[in-house]
Length: 291
Ligand code: G1P
Figure (cartoon, rainbow, N blue to C red):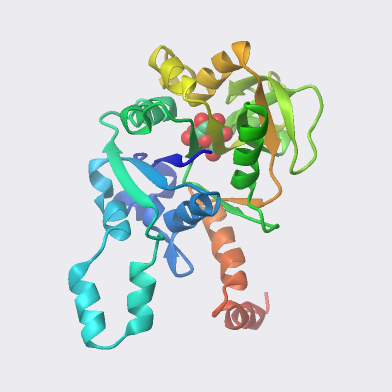
């Protein structure tokens, strides 16, 4: 079973400036918790027990968030604010560890993943890109399904969703013989990073969730710079696919690109409406706007 997940959080978040000038974009709040917490929860729900943050000097607040804060805990305890104490101490369950490693240079997503090589060791692993939030429609989350499928058929799983054709040049795009249904995996014939609209093999875009065999680490070591002059995870997966079966898994949930301002606002709306305690009042607030 896949127990380790790499979360590359070293990116400077230029799409989210000016907010991301001094706050990591992953720490921007979606309703009442930072965006990164949703991604960590998704991984934990899928059975992940070690989260590996590939991080940058400016992102210490992410590590602090998942660490204990003794001073705050003591104060809350003295003031008998036990519900808040519970909220800040149980961000991840005790069997889950969060470790971090630095990406010393911004050489691309493939390079970021490679920075976690020593921590991953010989294990197969998942990768979750924290810009994208996945709001699930079913009990079993998409990543969990991918992990189960990986175990069943021993094939890498790449989560995809359909995007409008004019946006294909912003994503990794997969080549498949036929479109899988939602919740299904299908053998991938190829994968290309940010193709031009004319060259795109389909409109199925890579969402930012991967379940990969350990072999990908070896491949990344020799992957040359590709699109954007960066070492691309997509290119290592393309090499893997020449010798191994790689499958595209079509997701069921809904994605929110929190790395973009409008995607972020959409996430706040959807997660706000669905919030256990705030949802009803939030909906009423929106109604009051009388747009
Ligand atoms: C990365 C991946 C790309 C994927 C995208 C999803 O690109 O390289 O294949 O489709 O994330 O968000 P980035 O957005 O980092 O340029």
